[in-house]
Image 1 (tube, rainbow, N blue to C red):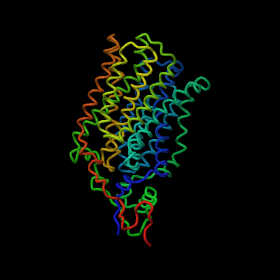
Image 2 (image 1 turned 90 degrees about the vertical axis):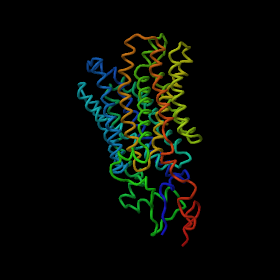
Image 3 (image 1 turned 180 degrees about the vertical axis):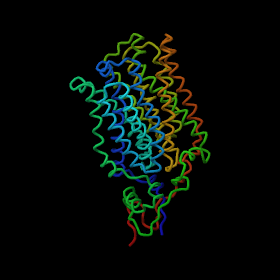
Image 4 (image 1 turned 120 degrees about the horizontal axis):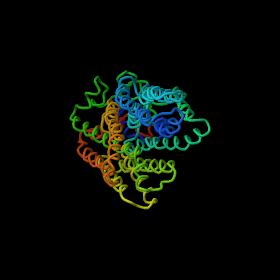
Length: 459
């Protein structure tokens, strides 16, 4: 009988077509998710004009999805470790597609807010699940690169919403950009068929045949045998009360530090997205079209995400992430000083790279920190707690703007959370992470059985 460590099998695998399929599907889902999140901001002026919505009600309409994202990240992240990740992802896609499309039928702010809250459940819930999916199957050597490349789909979704949104709204009305968001629901059967299930979940359910099929795709040199048995380290086994496990095995303090880091980063992201254009306009800059501004911020985010992931695979991800928080503090502070428009766009791109990009690298680190069996739960709770920073940021910065403070002080208020986030990351005990506790020296497949790459099982 041969016992195969499925966790190490995924770690040591060579990048192949199986990984490409997981990456493409996860990235596509994130692009849809990013579009659904960005579409309200693109359509809001037209909605306010058409429905006669006051600014106060418009704020409620926008923030309702954020409240949904808090609950979606926590509960749909946690439930994935119970019902399986494929079904959790499929439920999230149905939620954000159907209810974003339904928002196009709303004729009053309350109805719109309710359906956006329900869409927010899916938007928030899908994030921890696709990160956990990609983290589980990505080879260890390029794990952060693949996770951050996948997550740059959020910026792509935002760009698609900005580019398509203007044309669709002008031609067909604001409802059209919401109806278009319903299309991904048609892909749910393909998602269920194409995405592999979480390996600890399959092991807990005794589905060894499915595990053999995944093992053969991860390692093409492996030929399943009737006596093969699969196993995971004790800390990776799916069990009850997954939330409790976030605070076991010495992870309590680090879990709290992840929550602080997420809160601070999402505070910065939403403070900038809500107030940056207005603050720059008040400072006398001529920023051109809002579309160009959105593109610069999102292109910077993509570069920061992929670049940060590449660095994290070559250096220690914890210190790369801390450095990105430090860069955020510097770039946001610089925005408070007068400079030529060309330099401003460069600094805005840098701010996008070191805020949105930092959040994406933080997602990757969190996915690597927790064992497989509680990965969705750990990331879901971090995103859920962090999302409260996203809700608070527009309000806090709005109060500061109302106080007519100098421009530099407004931006310093947004930069301070970056310093707090950097300290929180540095205080995380990496020795407690799943990747640090896992030995990498030996092969997951026994050499004597002929299961190493390029070999066939002896007959």
